[in-house]
Image (cartoon, rainbow, N blue to C red; front, side, top):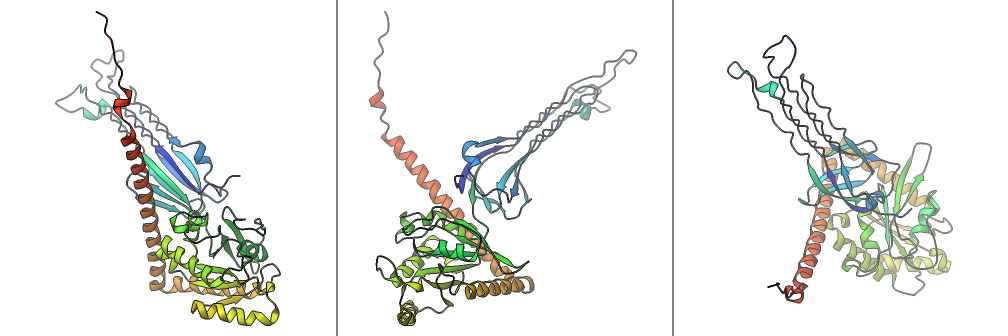
Length: 395
């Protein structure tokens, strides 16, 4: 199945039914009076989180969603039937943005979460509502109102606790295969990973966390180079980043320069994401002679001036992976405990997520600005003189 993590759709709620103009007509009941019923409310459009979905590909083929209109009222005080609501399933982890106002409408983070995105139109009133002691035969009704119409943009971000970050071919896919049941493609060439992969790391019957592997970054990604920048948004929901560094690159490049380039691109993409805790994971130590490993690790840590945790491992053999998994689990457990017991820690997490939402809106605004600029340039290229037609009129 094709992986699609961005889509734009149009949703339109149903129109409310019009009120009815009617008078009672019955044998032996002269001047029966008004009996026009009300129209039905228009159906609304809702989004529902579904954890069985993992792509937005359906929205590439169907882009217009409309709820049912309300039926008009009828005589004998009969109200019209209300329009049925439309429920649209979206993957858990979908951010919903109004493309016209760039407002973040909702963040679907749980299965079964219901979000109203287009309110149905109100029903119209029948003439029975307008009778009075001075107006026994009102001919006034009200029409149903139009349903809300919105242009929406969906951005899906995978729901993971831990994200893997690094250059192409750093061994991120091998690591996630080693510690979870995920089976991403692994090969000895860059950009093997083309879409994000999720793996559930289990430590016991009821203890686990979710790890995300995204396509590798390269220098210049913030200017559009490579694949990784497009998928970096999938790391914005993670609490911890594992920066995977290949200590023995096949092209003999400098691991320190590669790590610094990744840190720079991360900051360019999202300053808030760059502030997330980041651990250094030095991978592929099995490619170095045993007597050279300590010196290589010390050199990388010293030149990076790294202050955080450092882990040494070989993902392909599993050496060192258990210590990493245990440390990650302890850290996540402690973070959840702090957020539950300390309001300041909980507010800090909420503020981080608000900042990332603001950055997502800024990226959407920038993207919309570029789209409008291209449209304006296309209009400027159109020359009316090139399409002048001489018309000869018959005498």
